[in-house]
Image 1: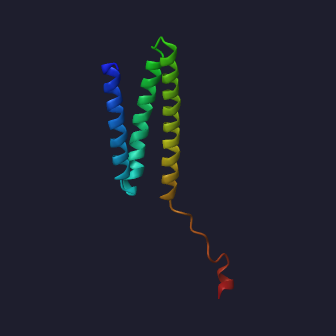
Image 2: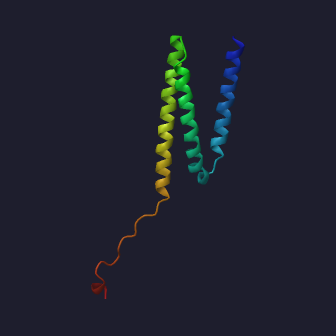
Image 3: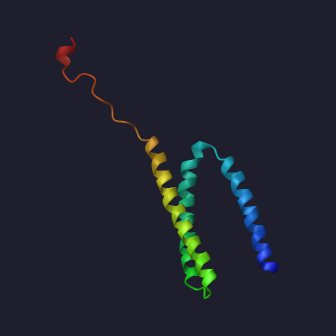
Length: 106
């Protein structure tokens, strides 16, 4: 096996384990600010993936790059959707009027 491929596979597997450990240890109060920051990072990664995809010359690297860009775009869109939904939970609900006619209440 190619040494560069083996090293890339090793880093990929370590990144998976590290990501799972970090995600499981984040308290829910920190989730929304962290999601906002990671959405910005994923946008940069997506742009980098599109630039790299434009520079490859073999068909199988184009397929892998296309899949990576599609999954990255889904990650960005999903991250913004989750962040928006979580921020909706922190908004105050409008207070409903209890007595529309104060004279009748007496």
